Image 1 (cartoon, one colour):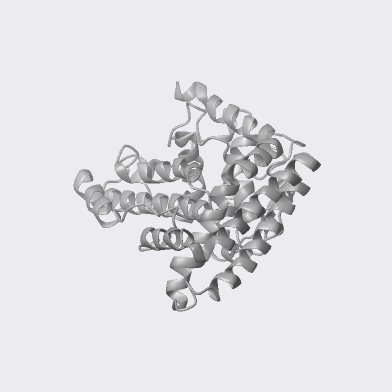
Image 2 (image 1 turned 90 degrees about the vertical axis):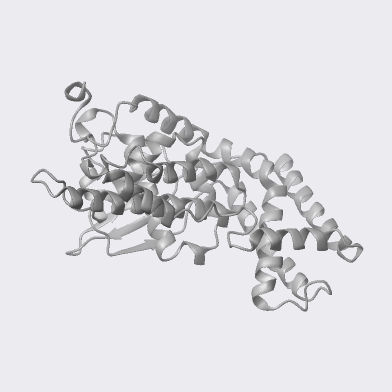
Length: 351
């Protein structure tokens, strides 16, 4: 039955939450080792270097001001079967111009959910201050990683051990120390877009799986399987490192796919004439849209700007880039939809 099938999926995937301390199973222990080593008198210069670096960011913040330009992200182009391309940069995902009904000049939900053959990440555009922060932090992490590798407390670590006890916790530690500075800049840079998305989410509170033509979710929408991507959307605000935030977005995507897979099994087990078709790739984006509506994530545009600007470009290739593109598409749909005609059924019909 429905309960047993969803329970089986929940037990299979109850693997725990990714740690902000590194994103791997032993990352918590690795972070603790890192902190213990920083407390050693031999690490006094390292600790002082971090303090000096954070202080230099604060100084440049005060001297130059924050948010010279609004954040206008150029996300990706998606090549569809048959050669058709959706040029997502032209959607002006986080800009203010051309806010129109998505059924008009912008791509339709059906276009955005069409099967994607490949996703190519393009360079993002943020405020000069944010871009400088990203460059400075990247350079500092690279330099300090090299220092750690030759430090007497880390130089005997294997490559795997150094990753868990050195490079990953260093990144987390640094972003924790820089968090308030970066958040201040991100809010100024993306606050208007955050407000637009928040208002849209509030106004679309009536939307259910029916509006997004997702009958396959009917039997799992109230299960723990569906709560997993919602929880991941909430968790993104509680972590600081870009790698950890990206991991949360990946958990959103995986949680949605697990919910769709379980729903397919439930529907197949019912074996009726009215059973919805099995879940497919074109169900993912509508499901992400629904998850965002249910989660109501705070300052979500800022979080996406942060991921685009501060994640290692290598980390945004492959599956992660595909996920980020789908999340961008979901946000664009929510930010631009102006009436219920964009959905399978309208507000009046549903009421």
